[in-house]
Structure formats: structure tokens, C-alpha cells
Amino acid sequence: MKGKCSGCSACAVACPKTHCIKMEYNEYGFLRPITNEIECIHCGRCEKVCPMETSCMISLDDSELYSAWGEADDRQASSSGGIAAVLSRYAITHGYEVCGAVMDYDTLTVKHRIVNDKNGLKLIRGSKYLQSDVTEAFSETLKNLKAFPHKKYMIFGTPCQISGFRNVLKLHGLIDRVILIDIFCHGVPSKYLWTKYLKWIKNKMKFKSVKNIEQITFRDKKYSWHTYYMNISVGGGIAYVNSREHDPFLKLFSMGVVNQDTCFKCPFRNKTSADIRLGDYWGKRFQNNEEGVSMVLVNSESGLELLNAVSDSITLIKQDIKERFGQQHTDYEYPKYYKKSLEMLK
Image (cartoon, rainbow, N blue to C red; front, side, top):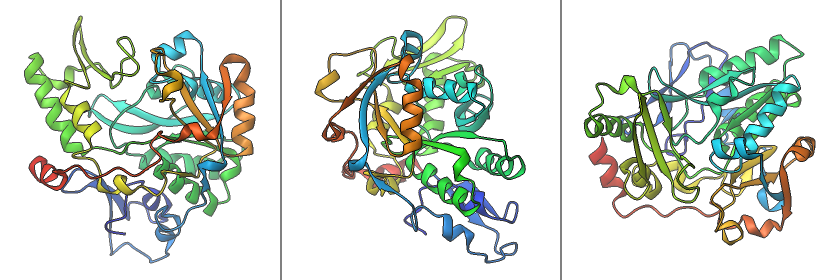
């Protein structure tokens, strides 16, 4: 799979031999599977679940499109309209556990984690523009689904992560107890951009240590929804705040100059394996809105039932499916200095 892999970790989760396949960062700072050939039993499960090889996907042209937003608190604390927060809270209330991306402040990396109460949902709220390591959380989810017939999960992730894990769940006949939600994804930047950026932040703000960072908000809507603002706080009223125009991490991430190669030709751009896809409702309709609006694409009966279940607590408006165009539906062109940028970063 060299050249196609997106680091979704499905192969590592599906492998029946513990730690036979590990996800490690490659020379350019992207998660890739490493196989222990001595431990490998050549069962072929890794190939069966790889979303780049086989995937049960539907076209987003066949989805139902909605604009949506939650109440003021959810909307303000979220990156767009707060619908992920509403869906997660509904899931917890109705006996689901929720698996999503959290910032690990011990390592300053992003990992997936399982939460089972409303307080835990605060950890997975908001966009995090880094490649999340899902292996441990997805493996735990699979283990729990197999061991406890009453367990149910709502899982958030990028389209490749969700497509890969759906393949794993289908392999074990467990898909019926899981709701899958993916996101519009611009791509993931190299880990090395993030580590160098943190050193830059430390020096610029004269932080004693990046270990003192208490809060990172990749898109702080206190300032704007359309104009991205990075907000990094070490407590005591000391914080770094800057817009995408001037913040080097947000600027380089948006330009894609050190993003993952696979993301430029993503096979999930116009297809999905999820029940619902969420993102920002960019475009003319809400161009003057600064509070945030979610784009919601419903792709299954389960997704529609879920959206209907929370409809009384949100503002929900059905829209023409054509309005999804412009929402990351075409492949991105490689930046002019893409290869040189990756080499310089390495």
C-alpha cells in the first residue's frame, strides 16, 4: 500500500496478533503501519479492511443536505454550528459511548478517546488540525463491542478513519451497534510542522515550557467564524492569539505545503462510509454569519433517525444538495514547492 496509505490505522486495529502492526511516524511526520514480519501470520485481514483497497461507500450526491446550528452555548464553543456536540450529548443520554479526537496535553498530540459522560464530551469538542492516532481507542471499542452485547458507540473521525473502521466492524458483524460520523477533511499536516511550531510559540511568547500549555483552540470563534484564529493559553491570563493570515501553523496547513500526500487525491472526497458527514456550511448563503453554521449530510436511515431525534433542540433547514459543491468536493492541486517544503521540514 506504499503511496496510497493515509494512516487510518484500520490494519493495526484488525490484526489478530497484538502489536504485530504498529502505527509509527515516518520520515515526513505521518502515521504509517509497521509490520513485524516475524509475528505476522499472513491472515490477510489488514488487506480486507484497508479503505484504500475495499470500502462500502455511497456518493454524497445521494445524501440529504441540511444547514443546522445548536443553541448559543454549543454554537459558541464549537468550530461551526455545534451539531456534533448536540449529537454526542444525545448519544450519551441514550446509552452510547462516544469516541472522538482529544488533545493530549501531556504529549501535545491528538489521540482518539472514548468518553461515557457529558463532562467528557468537552474534550472532543472543536476542530484539531493534526493527524489523530486512533489505534488504541478503536481497538478498545472493538474489544468492548465483542465482549459486551449491550454496548453502543458513536464514533467521529476523518473519512478514511471512519471508512477503515467500518470495514473492521463489518468483518466482525458489529456495525449495527455503531453510529459513524465523519467530517469534511482538508487533509492532515506533518507532525513535524506542529513540533517546530510549538518551539516557535515557546520562544515568541517566552513560555517557560510548552508543557505549561493548558488549552489549545485551533479555531477560536470569539473573534470570527470565517477567519480562523489560533488561541494557545498557559493560564494566568497569558495567551497567544493570532489569525490564519499571520499564524504560521494555520497558514501553512491551509496552503497544504506540508500536508499528507495521500490527502491531495482523497478517494473519500465525494463518497462516504458514514451515517452522517459534518462540516462548515461555507458559501454565499451564510457568508455574513459569524456565529457558525454546520453543513450536515445524511447518508443512511440511521443517520436520518438520529438527526430527527435531535431536531427539536436545533435549527435545521433542508437545502438543495447542489449547495455542497465548493465544500471540499474536488481534489487539491499540489502547492508549487510541495516536495521542497517537505524536505526542508524534514
